[in-house]
Amino acid sequence: MTKFFRYILLTIAIVCMLPSCKEDDKEKTTLSDSVRISAFSLKSDSTVLDNLNTVFFTIDLEKGLIYNADSLPRETDISALKINITTENASAINLTTIDSTYNYLDNENKAINFNFPITAEVVSRSGNFKKQYQIKVNVHRLNPDQLYWGGMQYSRLPGEGTLTEQRTVKCNDLIYCFMTRDNNHYMATTANPGEDWDITTLSLPFEPNWQSMRTDGTILCILDTDNKLYTSANGVDWENTETNCTAIMGILNGEALILTNDGTHYYHDKYPRPEGFTPRQVAQDFPISGFSDMLTYNSPWLSSPQGMIVGGRTSSGELTGAMWGYDGNAWAKLNNTITPREGAAFFSYVTFFVDDNWVTTEMPTWFVIGGIDNKGALRDVWTSNNYGINWTSGGENLFVPGYIMSRGYASVVICDEPINSTFSTWHSIDMMPLPQGYRCLPMRSVADENKVPYIYMFGGKAVGVNHYDQVWRATINRLRFEPIP
Image 1 (cartoon, rainbow, N blue to C red):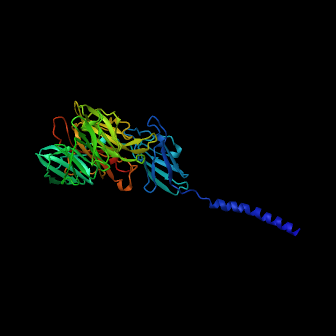
Image 2: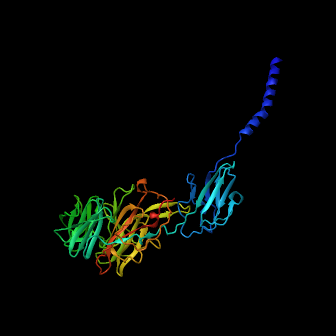
Image 3: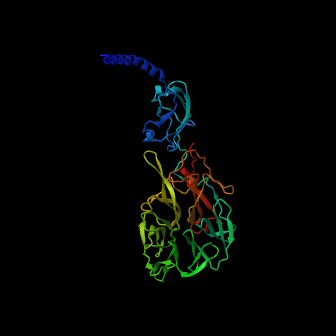
């Protein structure tokens, strides 16, 4: 019985304590002091832009900044956008716009004109703390995907005297510019075309055909005017290989791919000729002159590097725009989309793809620029994003502007340089103002993020014209946009 009464007394004591515990809990409850914006987005509005609600916004809590690093397309109307703001139970979000100040929590569907600065003041639930954020909706003021030449400057080729021939290549991390001026032969070298050139007067035991020169980045090959093949490692000292050929297609796997002629037919041959190799007769529609530089590429699904050329003239004198590829064993025609031409510039660069959710991806892209057809010099641009399987005309974004004369047989070199670098000794055409507008690009390492690949175009000529004594520089607009903020 005594034990039973003890249980009753204990139960009564616990029941009596419950109100006291609840009272203690109520006294410990505090209102939130958070002024953090945890999410920000634009509401859907297809009249402005498809998938507007998927545009990603960066929230910099330390600096109090909210912005879209990937700018919206040029001319997007941002004068009446609705927004979504998420906080941690804030008591007020006071928005200050060009025409009013109001509490966003009381009117979440009000349209805002983002052409002017917008400030958001977040008030904590407790009312003890406030924090201001600057909100910006970035829109490109330039076409980000346009190949931009104007303002990217131009200069003369190095040296003095009347230029009659030139050929520029990149080899052993140096740019080599070979020229004939006033019947004298010169070689100019530099690590960067914007810097000073070291100019050497060449004393050659042969008369060079500068346009025949090819390189794989480690060795130089050239023909003389009698079609003898010479090689060099430094551009000054040349070795006569005692090999006659009519053209050098390129250099692949340490072998010069050459064309020979027996007086009747052309043949694919190599220097040095591998043991057991037998020259093969050239197809009737294969170019024997005027073809582009050979572009080489490799990939995990290829057993060896492959070489590509574009355009040229066949043995019958017909122009072709076809792309031919060499896989280390045989040549094959891979595409015949590009209009016929000779002397086209063919090189690898980049373009950008923006998907439906406004995610931007950098893509390796092959470029073909200019050349000469039966009517004259060209300035059109062709690109391929799938290793030459399909080619498309550059359209309104990728073109050579009218103030650059149409040309063929220009040399193109790609150089990585700091963003928006300029050279005091170069000339400018129409330097356009650069907006802020792009974050660090995909597929580029931290070491490269402050450098931009610039296209340098050396020389070139039209029908009946000696080589233009010019160097032009270009890049895709998007590449030179400064990161935000």
